[in-house]
Image: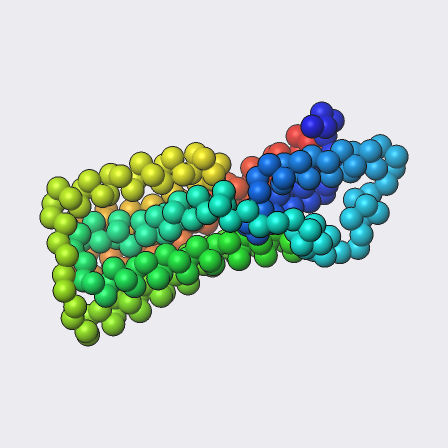
Length: 256
């Protein structure tokens, strides 16, 4: 591993390449070896007064895709992340339902939620690959990564609408079962956030459901609660965005 710091542009390229290869299903050990080797080459080039463009060419996107095409997809080791993403996506629906009471789902809703989770997983992986190979700004990266979350929420909204029209058998988990599921998911989300080194899942979950839960104890009418909840949700997400941007700027200043 190269001890000396690379330029900010080179560091970002290495990070983006690592994310792109990971989201493309490549082996972790191979990703580590390739990025470390490239980091050494970039450091040597910069020491000789060359820029990253002279090493990777005019199109970083094509360079990433070229490296990815030369690597085998590691389906076995990569598949272990699928349950993590799927369970994380299901938590949005489950926590929203817990606010309303105990968990009780129709067969159609369970199937719809599983499909929603798969779509969410695919959307997240596509979003990560897109932001990595196109090297977008941090602000644009944040909104792109949020896009699959909101699209998935729209899909599950459609599932709920259809479920209200067509009745299928119900499965009731009861009070104890509901809270056990809720606490298990909460622990999972916290551990996942620590493991992934990002609070985006936790922050989005809190922003979507905490305002609704707190406002349910007020005397506001339904419309006022809905509008106020939406405003608070956007404010919380906006504050998190502001924090991440400021943090990125501080890190850049430290490197410079």
